[in-house]
Amino acid sequence: MSRIAFIGLGTMGAPMAAHLVGAGHEVTGHNRSAEKAKAWSLKTGARCADRVEDAIAEAEFVVSCLGNDQDVAGLAGMLASAAQSRGALWIDHTTISASGARNCAQIAGQAGIGFLDAPVSGGQSGAENGTLTVMAGGNPADFARAGPVLAAYARNAVLMGPVGAGQLAKMANQIAIAGIVQGLSEALNFALAAGLDPEKLIAAISQGAAQSWQMNNRWKSMVEGRFGFGFAVDWMRKDLGLVRDEARRIGAPIPVTEQIDQFYAEIQATGGGRQDSSSLITRLRPRSTAAIIRAPDSTGHPPALALPGFADIEAAAARLAPFAIRTPLLRADGLDKICGAEIHVKPENLQRGGAFKFRGAMNRLAALGTAERKAGVVAFSSGNHALAVAKAAQILGIEASIVMPADAPALKREGVIAAGAHLRLYDRLSESREAIAADIARGKGAVLVPPFDDPMIIAGQGTSGLEIALDLADRGMWADDLVCPTSGGGLLSGIALAFARLSPQTRLWAAEPEGHDDYRRSLAAGMRVENPAGIRTICDGLMVPAPGDRPWAILRDRLAGAIPVSDAAVKQAMALAFSRLKLVLEPSGAAALAAVLTERERFAGRRVVVVLSGGNVDHADYARWLAEGMLTLPVR
Image (cartoon, rainbow, N blue to C red; front, side, top):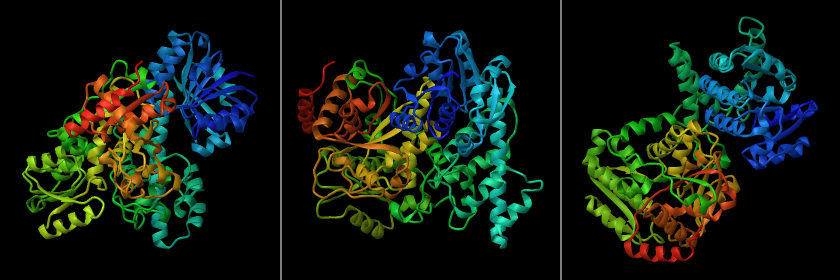
């Protein structure tokens, strides 16, 4: 039996690695999530390693089942730098680009390591039952050597050609599956509308020209609306993105597949990104259109909830291009040592209006029709959204009325007035800003622009996530974690939609003030939970009562967790940003950096993106908090 390192113990990888253990191989597993690795180890009795380097030490075979090109490229670099890996055979089951596979083969070959690109087909059930099909690219000798390994979890393995051929075969496979599932969706929907018995229908047609594993194994769950299993829509869209890129490169038109990909985008837009790809049928059924999500009772969001998708973020980026700043992704000397991680900073305090809020506000206002622009807009906010709407309205020549708490920072109140908006102050503890804004909107016939619970606002904020993912990809890397200040959740939910498409392996964390940790409470309860009233924090922009309906619908299944931070930690983060990054942050804008400082062990050694959401702070307050933060600033 062989010594095998298995890297990637996710939905597919964990059962595949378990089959290897069952076949008598000496398997060491590793997963980015230590919790998943330990659970797999307890279940199989096999060893797990905390670091990739420890898992691959002296392995004869390295088997990987990861997320995307960047993951696989990172593993290639680790293998190439590990002297003890020379002579090993690397079998990569990740679905990536053909060019990515060829690059990995070249890197591995220079280090004396064999390589097979070997994507699989068969889904979660195939991995669990050991009945996968492997489509391999590589040389015949390596393929023959891999035989005993592949036999543990594959019913069928085919050498398609040289390296890259396996990925091309998987692309063809996904084209076929996408068409089959769409055809089956339409056939079942037609049958149900016509009053036919779906079970009899499948029994009849599956024995004829329409034979398909998909048909015999998916039809019942499609009819019953059970989609919490198998191959997720998010991953299908990732694979079809690879297909589209390759098809354009080689000049092979795939118009039907591109249309089906847009159908999957509709499923994502209704919050179904984690559902099985057979959920395609939902877009054909009554009450399941591209614009609404059918919500279970326990989740706390209403039954007809408009949600944006990745296409909306792309449209927002185009709409914002003439107006918004494309903020950079920064690195800073010494910041990594202090935080114990590789830190990349997204400084949204450099955005117009001093905060990320300009993205959502401008996206919403720029999409208004002529009549709506004439009627004007009304917004309510603790500050940054108010500033953003006022500035966007000023740029577009729209009348704006803004409702703000009387205790909002003077800098923000003065900014609203300077932008020409009408300001209405209210008492945060005794009045409802929503009710006041609604009354003004009704009286003027104006458009209400909420701070976060709006599809156009979320899509606009999501452009920051789009920029982060693209900037990292340009550097040939991806983020292990992203931490973002979170109140209602508009910014992080927009980032989550962008990362679901471009970097689904990244863990997303909400940073919240202590006492206003509604996302932490809601995740623990499995439903939206409000904060207790009356608790104060210097993070004035992160004090909403509860998660927004739409952000919660997007984030509830995508968040790795939520981290509460103290005012003291926030002051320390403000001081760190000033001393190391030369950036001025308001308390709310520093919450994510405070979370990383508070949870150093959680992020140790990982690549972390920290979103700095805003920098609008009164001078006197900033000077005082900065001085207090400097007293506790770690020196490393």
